[in-house]
Every structure is written in structure tokens, then in C-alpha cells.
Length: 255
Length: 255
DNA sequence: CCTTAATGTATCAGTTTGTAACACTCAGCT
DNA sequence: AGCTGAGTGTTACAAACTGATACATTAAGG
Image (cartoon, rainbow over all chains, first blue to last red; front, side, top):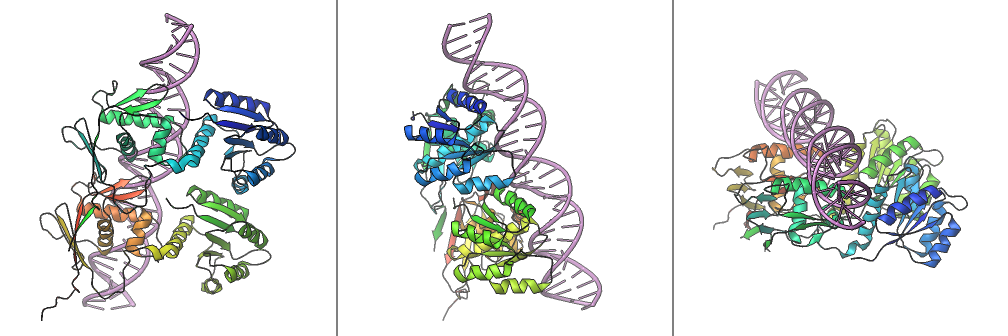
């Protein structure tokens, strides 16, 4: 498990601070708060935080100024909260060095989604399974429980050799599982694998894709056998997977 | 994935700025704006941008002057926005060093198409598969799933050895796929491969050609097998391809 | 049992893709 | 010139896909 992330919320509205603190604490984050620029500096001097949620509208020094000044000494991710606005503020926000911005009033879950997206991006260098612009064609084949998946052909066959049509999203999800069978994958892992680092998505959207995938793969989708739920953690692909990697270049050459 | 392009919109009309910002941001570009020549210079001094969209009609320094002055120190691509006009402005615009121009009022999608065309041209040096003015005739033959394509003869035969007539556009598209089978090709890739760097085209026009090609190649064009769609990304040719390259000079030599 | 939180999924809305129908261009022909 | 037909792109709408909402269901822990 990863280290608990430490967030700093900077907003002059006590109600919002409390709302967010509650919501984010519950999700397992460590949360500090500040009601002004000076409080923010005090907090920042006291501990290093992993992400700052910064209201643009603050008494005294405003968020933009603070953001700029933070950026002079640090690359800590910043999400700006802007009042309802056209695109103008957004641009300003990003230009000042914020990593993302969110319009008030906002859905806390969307904040969470964007936070996660940023954390994915930041630690992103680590991830493998990213689509490379490489020339060598990925041409893997997977077999499990009589099923067969051919990556290059984007084709899935049931044990009875019927072609089962999966949508792009379902296909990507299945490949993610096949790459790491018999391992619990969190929703974050799956978003990362299927949508790349950039995506902003609520994690429940994975549940829905899982549900759709199960409907196509499982004999009895009420009692899933291939993809099982690990409560509180994520999902796991239970079958053993045999992988054939062809190193062929995708096109045979004969002169 | 490629780095996000950074655009600078220079226009005194706030409404147009916002419209374009919204449109282009949504398409994944990073956008800065300026309402005047001085703002433009400030923006340019702050970061390097990948393309400038420059209104010709500006209070104070006009677009032509700005364009010229930019060109003294930089080759950054520029698209000029001209008021409705005859060719006069166009010519002037291009003389001043703009890469392209667009008449107001314009369709944002056309702007997008022209931007992409410029980006293709700029990074164009990289692409291979470009029609070379070389003397040696390319005389490749491709085989896939029983089909046969002879590049020199511009001939395609079905598994039953029937000649299937493809239009030149469809033929080019198919060749593009055969050159990189089992790889997802974006619409941009395909425009680049089939129409060359110069072309200006909406990317939906690729969809149409795909549709027409499928109708001729696929057994059941409702459930395409050869060319599959990868939602949000592009298209992929699923079959393995066998390529026979003849290095002959196109006309048989026998002494 | 009851409470609470997590997960499953039907339904709906927004987005992307498919394609028919139309319009325009450009050879080749009269 | 004008006509004709093939090729191509656009418009316009249909179909597929995706994710959010909302509620149902299930598990965990008293």
C-alpha cells in the first residue's frame, strides 16, 4: 500500500473547508486546512504536502498570487477552485502554474477524480503498459479458461469458438486483467491501464464497464467466476492466463 | 503520446477568443489568449507556443505588422484571420510570412483542419511512407486473409480472385493500413498517409472512406472484421499481412 | 436483525462513429 | 461550351458506446 497522501485545503469559507475535510478524510487522505495566505505558508513550512487545493478568491493575497509564489519554490500539484466563470479564469489559473482547476460549486467526487488524475500523472513515469509509439507491433495472444484473445486482431473467442464482440472499452479492460491475472487491481489501476494517465473519471465508471464485461464473458453474471470483486479493494481476474507473445513485426517480409 | 500543443489566440474580440478557447481546449490543446499586440508579446515572452492564430484587424498594431515582427525572430506557425475579403489580404498575409489564412467568419472545424495540416507539414520531415519522386517504381504486393493487392498494378483481388475495383482514395487508404497492420492509426495518420502533408481535410472524411472501403472488403460491413474501430483513437487493420517487395525497377530487364 | 458502506446495474444523456443522400469537382466526351 | 459519370467531401441523421444518476442489492460489523 502506498503512503497516505497529505492534502492542504486553502479556502476562506469554513463550511467548504469542513465539507472537504470530511469527505477527503473519509477517503483516506490526511488533510490540513488554511483560511488565508499566511495560514497557508505556516502549514507549508510545517510539513510537506502532496497536493494543494487552492481557492482563487481569498481575502488578502488571492489564489493566483499565492499559486505563483508557491511555484517559485515548489512543484507540488495545485488544484485551483475558481468562481463560476468563462474560460478566462481557467486559462489564468493554468498559466500561473496550477495543475488543474475546478469551478465552484463543484461535486466533491469530481475533485477526487481530478486529484487522482494528477497523482497518476505525477507518479506516472513509473507505469509500464502504456501505449508506446514504438514500431514493433504488439501482437499478443492470451488464453484463459478456453477463451482466446488476440490483441492485434482485437478479437475475442469464447470456448465454443464464437466471436464475442467487445467494445473498445471492454476490450481494454479485459487486456488490463489479462496482463495481471490473479492480482487484485484497484479501480485506479484499471483507469490507469485503460484510459491512460490523462483521463479524469469517477471510479464508479469502472464498475459499470466491469458489469458490462461480465455480462459478455460470464456464464452467470450474477455469480461471476472470471472477474471477482474484492470488497474495499477492487477486482481480480481469477483464471490462469497463458500468454503467447509473437515478436513478429506484424508483416512478413519476403523479397 | 505527443506533447500537448500550445496555441496563442490573438484577437481583440473577447467573444471570439472565448469561443475558440472553448473549442480548442476541448480538443486537447493548451490555449493562451491575447487581445492586443502588446499582450501578444507578453505571452510570447512568457512561453514558447506551437502556433499563433492572429487576427489581421487589431486596434493599435495590426496583424500584418505583428506577423512581420514575429517572423524576424521566429518561425512559429501562424494562421491569420482576415475579415471577409478578396484575395488581396490573403496574398499580403502570406507575403508577410503567415503559414495559412482563414476568412472570418469561419468554421472552427476548418481552423482545426488547417492547424492540423500545418502541424503535419512542420513535423512532416519525420514521416516515411510519403510518395517519393524517386525513380525506382515501388512495386509491392500485399497478401492478407486470402486477398491480394498489387501496388504497381493498382489491383486488388478478393480471395475468390475477383478483381475488386477501389477508387484511388480507397486504394491509398488500404495501402496505408497494409503498411502498418495491427496498429491503431489515428485519423491524422491516415490523412497524412493518403493525402500527403498538404491536404486540408476534416477528419470525418476519413470515416466516410473507411465506410466505403469496408463495404467493398468486408463480408458483413456491419460487423467489420478487417478494419476495426478503436473508439476515441482511430482504426486498426486486424489481419496479418504478408508483403512481397520486388526491388525490380518496374520495367523488367531482360537482355 | 439493523445500520452503514460498497457494489451492481437499469436507465438516461452526451459523445463518437456509421452511412445515406446530396453537392461539387474534374476528366473525358460530344 | 455543355454533358456525363466517377470520385470525394459535407450535411444530417441513426446507431453504438460511455459514463452519471439513481436506486437495488449485498456484505460487514455491530
